[in-house]
Image (cartoon, rainbow, N blue to C red; front, side, top):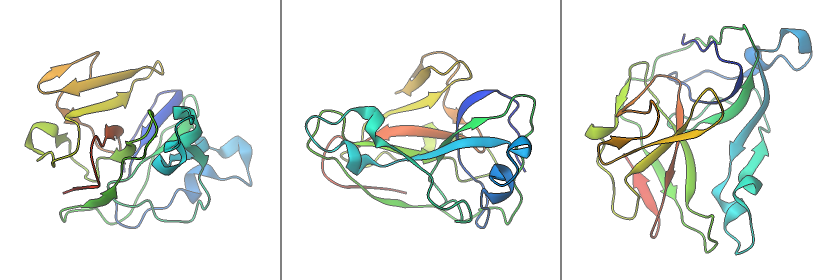
Length: 178
C-alpha cells in the first residue's frame, strides 16, 4: 500500500481496483481512526451563480464503497499515523468521463486522482478539448500549488505521486479524460 505521514488535510486517491476506506476510517473506534472528515467534491453543487467553491464538499456517504479509479477524496489524516491500503493494483487505462461545466463562476472543478501505484507524468497525459491545462494539488500546509504547461508553484512538478489527488477544471462543455 501507499503511505502518508502528514497531519492535516490530504487529497487522496487509490491505486487499487477494489479498496474501500472502511478499515482506515474505523468510525466505530475513533481513537483508531487514520482518516477523519472524509469528503468528496461534487461539481454540480457549485454550478449555480451564487454557489461558493466550498459548497462542493460533501461528506463521503458510504465508507464501504470502493474508491473509483481516477477519483479522489479529501480527508484529515491523523498525526503520526501511516496510511495504508491493500487490494488489486490498477494496471489498465483509466477513463474519467462526463466531467462538466456548470453556469456558476466556481463551476467546472473536478477532484481526480492518480489511479496507479507509480507516479503519473502529467506531461504524458493528453488534455482533451474543453479542459484547462493546469492541475492543482494540496500541500502539507493546506495551500494549493499548481503545474501548468511545464511551470509549477511550490513543490508541485509534472509528477503526481501515487495515492494523490488533484483538481482539474473544465472550461467548456463536457469532457472525457483518458
